[in-house]
Length: 172
Image (cartoon, rainbow, N blue to C red):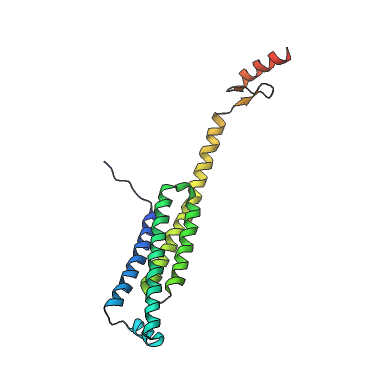
């Protein structure tokens, strides 16, 4: 059995979601075990211990929520390729909001947000191609499956000749 090939925007958005969730795991570890990081140590000095704990909790919650939302949007986007533009816009919004929620403190969160923006941008670009193909296919179908309707008796006919014969009966 052949494995399903996933689209690039799906894989990129999933990667961004996983990176954000992994970012939260690093902050969870920093709650229980002290580790040497100059940026976090400067924050601890500026915010104090209680303020720094609240900051860590905010980053953890924002990372988990943003990462989960990106993964959910990627799965829904893969199942509904007709709405790529809408999901691409939502992915970009969630990625930007994750930067604001997490803060511009940690490089992993910035990289994950940029990867999410890239996935959303690719989805928007691909949506234009899908819309063009869909319109072309719909136009071809409408040319071949034209139906004629008699307005007096609401009968449908598949050809112009059948419609003419029917109309001659009404006028004779």
